[in-house]
Image (cartoon, rainbow, N blue to C red; front, side, top):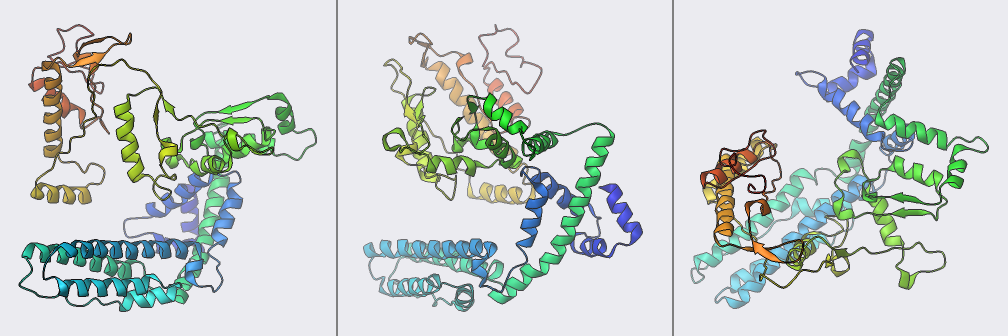
Length: 483
């Protein structure tokens, strides 16, 4: 990359200097280098990177259509609709509450008018119509009535102000242009992206040559070389040999497959001999360009045994959980049911997706899942939010972590002191010991030492796997005594 940039600077390449002006600032050209590398790395997860890149750049060469019909406009248009709908629901919710309040006629009229006006905009079907509606929308002044308690008025005003602010943000951040202006903005990017495409392809070629000179390859090379061999047009190809060789192809963690891997699998399969196991709820490798939609497409298309047709592919639901007790599964299902949908999580989590108890445990403790929420003071919350803005990598303040760590230490002591009963592998019960307790953290490097210190303060043995040492409270205990 450094060599390419140096050559273009020396040659005063006009196209190169044009995008340097666009993508770099006074601090240097690192931003542009990062863009090129990021796109290059991303397209390696596609079967044919150069073809994919050309297709995506050509998408910016759009015709004169209403902007909401473009792929970008469609997403933004839906976002605007969702924000307006959210505002309507918020006000409707307050309107419902007013049924139980006295002397609120003025507020009922105002809120009803708010809903009517926002719904008028929401019903618009084209970009220009909703653009005009958002930018001319004006809600009436908040009414004054001394008969209504301040608590009610403040609540209504707060909700209404939030709705107005959200609509204002839409106007300022999304509905900035008419359809024609938005299209021109996209078209103007076409020439720029074409230059970036050339640079990515030039980098790809030189990088490939450099690797060949050193006789090395990276992981994506292995995938693409394999794909190149398998898709060769020669008679009696390698792919056909593998199709004959493999009786079955079994794939675990299928939700983390990418397009290259999928293409390779399809070239060596007979289309009816692949057995895939996966769970889209466990998809954690999107940063490696995993495509959970490959799993979802089959999940929705394949049929269960009861409704299986002659040409249908079979779906087997592995819905039983053998790891956890019923109380754990119940709370997990409640949480997932409320937060997972097609829009958030790629799947509608309903009773068909529930985790069902598969393990057997003896009757014993009246077990209940506990969820403890530590409510910080308002001033602490505001400090927390500021810290989050300033330092996205580590938004948690030490004070907040300490509060949580103290709570956890106290909880451990309570469990031990109460001689809480736990279940053995042989299904008998015994008193809890420190080795039965584990503290799981989102990240350990910064948080674990604080938890370790707070647990140690209560003279409880503790071991942290991020440190070489064992705390002084653990050194004189046997292996099965520390937690």
